[in-house]
Every structure is written in C-alpha cells, then in structure tokens.
Length: 377
Image 1: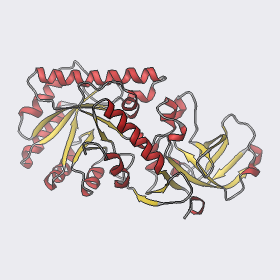
Image 2: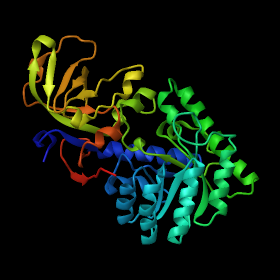
Image 3: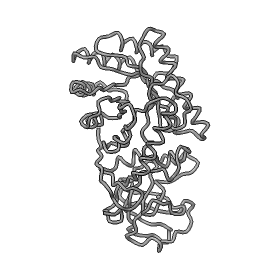
Image 4: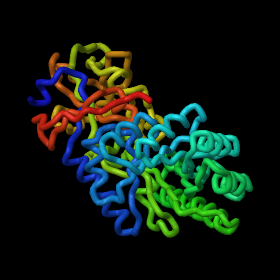
C-alpha cells in the first residue's frame, strides 16, 4: 500500500529519518563518554525502542507505569519511572518488581520518600528511588543547596523498605531558550546542579551511584557530561517543529507527520479544509512562543516536502484549516478534493499520542510496515 491509498488521518513515520536521528544522538554521546537511557514516552512502540537501544546500556525512561509494564513484557528490565511517584501507584511498582522488572521511582519531598519506604517495608522489599533535582526552576525537584536533599537521602538510605540510587534532573527550561548559546548554558547548568547534589549526598555519607540528566535540547547540544552517569532524552528520535524552532534539528530531520486529505475549500477566505483536526494533530501550540509560529503544523505534500508558507492555521475536532502563514492568497485549485497532504507536528509526543499505529515509510510513498503503539496510563 502507498500513502495516498491510506484512510486518513494517519500517523506516518519515516524510518530513514528516525534511524539518522538515533545514530546522531548515539554518536554525540559516545564522543562525550556517556550512555543514553532513552525516554520512551513518545515512541510507545517496541519497534522504535529496539532501534533506540542499539549500542546503549539497555535501560529506558518511562512516564507511565503502563509503559513500564509494556516494555518489560517485551524484554526491557531496567526501567526508570521519571515522574514523582504517587503513593497509590506503589503497589503497581511492587508487582512489577516481583515479576523481575528493575523499576526505580522518583521522589522530591520527604512525604514521598517516607511513603516509598513504608510501602517497601509493608511489602517486604526495598524500593529503589532517585531524588529529583530542580536545576532550572522549570517544574519539580529539590533545589540545589536545600537541606531537604540530605533529609530525603537519609530516609531512602537508612530506613528499611527503600534504597537510594542517586539523583536526576530534567532541564525542561531548555524548551524556552532563544539561542544555541542559551541551550548550551542550560546544559552546563543542568550538569552542575545534578553533579553538585550528588557530591553533597556523598559528603553526607550517602550513596549516589546514579547521576542522571537530560532533555533533548541539552542532550543534543552539551559539550561535557563530566560527573554524569547517564543521559535521558526521547523526542530526539522523531524531532518536531519546536525542536526545529530551537535550532536543535532541521525541518527535514522531522521523522513524524500526519497524513491528511483535502475535503473542501473556502476560496473567499483563502482556506483549504482537511480531515485532520485537533483529534489527529493535538492542540499543542508549542511554537507560538518561538520566533516563528507554526500554527498547528507545517503543511507538506504527500512526499513530506513543505509547501510554500502553508500551515494549519486553525482546527476543530475533525477539521484542519490550511492557510498561508501571512494571510496571503491560496490557490485552492492546486489542491483539489482528495489531495493527500502531510502535516509536520509542533510536539511529536502530543501528536503521536492521538494515534494507535505508525505507518512506516523509508523516504518514499510505500508503506513498508505498520508498527503498533499504545496510549493510556
């Protein structure tokens, strides 16, 4: 089957771009002497993750316990659940560990650390945990220099039911950087914060074997990982318009797109109507705060080549509105009803989450494979 024969909307994955992106990250980190723990929240497919794990230590990062369950069932044992653990999920973690999965949880406060230790004691096992560090004020974590770090570490190390494995941080603030220099500075800040907190734990007589950092922008641009034991990143496999807007990738590195079909026109408004609305593209508008607002996605022909300055300017649930970025004239006759188009996403994670499978191509129109993916928690 070819792309122009598929029912739309459909998620398209260009394997050649995917493999090129994976190889680039692998080679970059190898030069800097550090391994990668791929984040699989975007991929949600063993076919993709097997490619990402090639040449890496073998561990993965997940954002849901459903991901942990799925990838463990497919042979991946070393799993970091990189969202602060909620007490109501600890029995699920216990069950996975009893089956043989080496699941590590994440905490950033005393109450969570105590809950981990208490549940571990009650279930007759030690639950391993990392302490999350807030390296940029972006979201969660213990700030460097806060004595809460040592108090959490002591609970995890000294109380039965828990094990302190180390620290981790995520430089989510890198997504707001305005230049490559700013991303490089953020990468340095991220590393210094994690390494500094690891050293503080060690000075207090506490173990810290794992020092984990990562975001796709900082992982791709950093020039040193001294003191770091692993890097985490996920969207680098696919890339998207936000990453292109940051300068981390080029438009033609984006491996993911949504295939859609022209279903109508509004010539007076210079609009083309497609069958891919926000249910297919997501509502993510991550480029709106960047130097170039890409609307709900960049419009390409069926081969994946961007068309002039066309973007998806608006969406409803099942309809996409294609227009010129600057409001100029659109030649609707150039795109008759039935014309297949491909939309490059703002945020690969959010767009992929709308779909249950990848239609895999290799630079052409032939669908060479269909890879299943999953959703939910």
